[in-house]
Image (cartoon, rainbow, N blue to C red; front, side, top):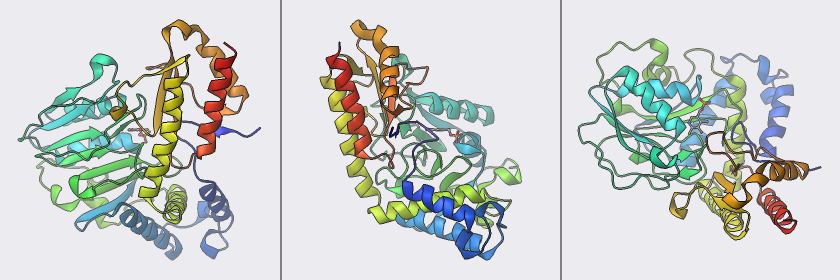
Length: 356
Ligand SMILES: *Cc1c(COP(=O)(O)O)cnc(C)c1O
């Protein structure tokens, strides 16, 4: 049976990435060696790293003055690296979910951090509006897509202070104006590649302003200077990410992705609204994520959730159980997920409804 992969992360990758990665595992760049056993100092891998960085710059239209680096430690390490490198007096955080809360918590370990607004009062089911960003903050941290709760901040924010964004789960899903951000970071395992590498885009002029001693590995400048080769980079994960970026370019880039992603999300949200059994967890359509679609069964059908999960599973739907903090269901519609998979899920929802 065909499987439809709705996992939230690690998650579906383009078939192109899988196939090219298999090729690279067997014979990397014509070297006769596997990408798993090649020196990161080999000219072939240095070329791979440089190409990957160049592809990110091209696909996201990264302006002058910014560096793209690849690091270990996941997006979670960025939760502390950001304040260590940027926080002098005060940092401001928009708390829109679990990842945002974790980032905020780390900042408080490093210095003063304030919550500008939070949607915790309604289990993070909306994006706070009408908040004021303190003009004396060193930076304002946001999480553009709240993977667990299915909300997304789709507009690049206007801010009086530098903006730092965790874009782990919506990077490359739509165009962003990079010039509006001081730092953008993203763990690879949602839209880019396998786990093990984190992409960071950093504007040079925000660095070097703090007085604290920064451990070498946690200093962005170390990795900028060494072109992501200060220590052994995650060679395999970078190579696989390069394949996804090549695919993305071939597909027409982030604008084409946005169109496809919006179309996929609409198909599913429309069905959630129409189907008598289901309801979305995010009520304002403007706040709904196009990457992670969260929904539950209406209160009167609540007891059918486990049955629906089993039914969907029997039809090849993988990874649609909601996160434990939301319950219900979550279908992640990352770039690589074809529209056919969304249509298949909608069919399963209709079929289940017709039996009830
Ligand atoms: C998945 C995710 C993370 C965590 O990434 P790790 O690489 O596991 O540290 C952080 N933020 C967001 C928005 C995520 O979706």
